[in-house]
Image (cartoon, rainbow, N blue to C red):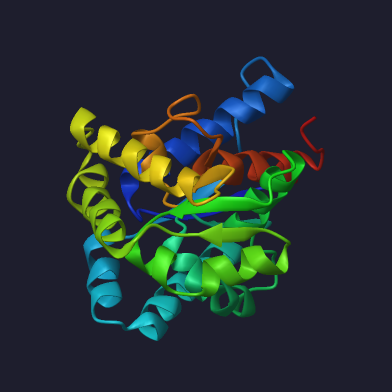
Length: 233
């Protein structure tokens, strides 16, 4: 079994889900008392958020790259950035190490294409929805992504940082998300990428009128596949 390196704490609420999903995946595949070999580098999220808000992405990239280097030096065979937003600096992190970085957009796109969906709505932080890195990479992989209108983007972002990252799950916020999804469906979205690893804490498959792509679960599942060198069928 290969060793998985996790760059987490971005926020810890969703990082805990990564740990759970990965270990459930290993146990399901191997049985008994088996669990994952993994190492976690967990940030103080507030320090990273301050850099995001200040637009200091290169400084944030340097922090994540340093974490990846430490994980590689500790024996990890692969590294995951346990958040969607910070994949805006994924190339910087990959350049810092010789082990592969398992990219959250790529594994999500694989599942979207497997379901023969070509146009998706994208929910996430304002950075994920408004910066081009996410939509452009999806476009390169043959998937068109649309985002909510500005007022909806602001609300999605606010719920993430003021509620979900703090462990608050409010039914009224879930209802707002579902209304936003309905508006994306009216614009032609065939599915919805939950492009923030905290959103699946609030929304699960079966909520709303469209397929939901849980990036946290899909990323963790891909890590299990890598660790065992065996695709999940």
